[in-house]
Image (cartoon, rainbow, N blue to C red; front, side):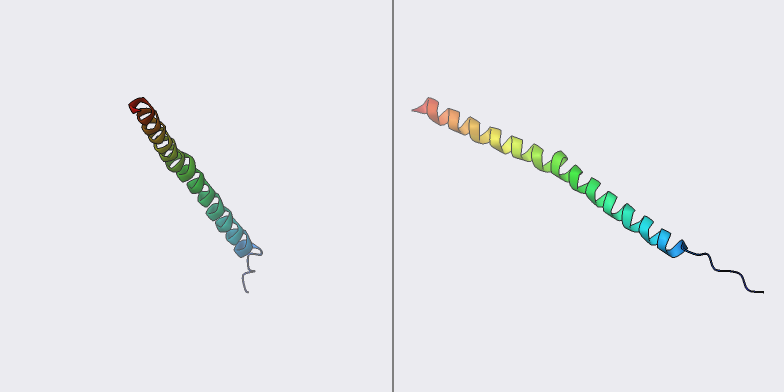
Length: 59
């Protein structure tokens, strides 16, 4: 007597792994963009504003 195969287990597993992969990729992307990139852009922009202000005061 053969054991009946579990129907749809591979498809469920594949969809689960694809969903987890896409979700973790999006989470990592948002974390990088708003946690690292935007913070560095604000620091850079503030530095240029400070440089511009000091150049105007030096004139």
